[in-house]
Structures are given as C-alpha cells and as structure tokens.
Length: 87
Image (cartoon, rainbow, N blue to C red; front, side, top):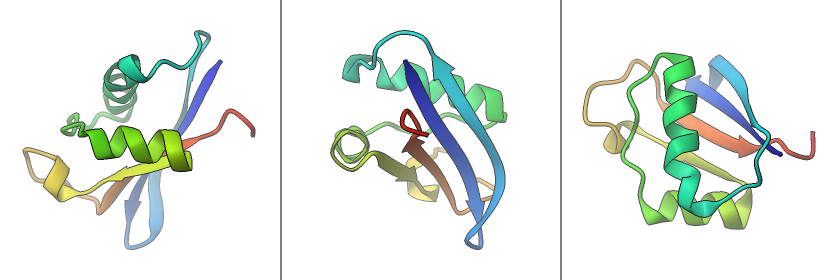
C-alpha cells in the first residue's frame, strides 16, 4: 500500500495537506502518476518531475518541489511529499 503525505508549505507553515493512498505496491515508474493524482486532489498544477525528485523520495522518504519546478507561478513556497506508509 502506498501512502504519501503531501504538504503545501508557505513561510514554513502547512497551508494544505492530504494523505494520498493507493492499494498497489510502490513502483518508481509510476511516481509521476502519484504526483499527478496528488496535485489534482490539491487543485495544483503538476510540477516537472526530475530524476533528483524520485531519488530523494526513494533514498530519504521525502522530496520537495519549489517554484523552479513549476511552469507557472505558485502561491506557496514548496510542495513536499513524504512517505507516510509507516504512520
């Protein structure tokens, strides 16, 4: 089971958050689909997914996206994805 805690951060405070759940097993190749579904639920544009984002999520159980990762202006500082499967 996949559980990802997605946090929209502004000035080091959580503005919005959700816990995304999927009953399949985690697959690195499907990470963009997880990200896209999370952004849809948060009503955000989907950022550009780079290899560094996937690496950080797999290696450190979290990753973040800043303004540089979005093609349009955002109202927040960071979108943080954190592995919540052990919560």
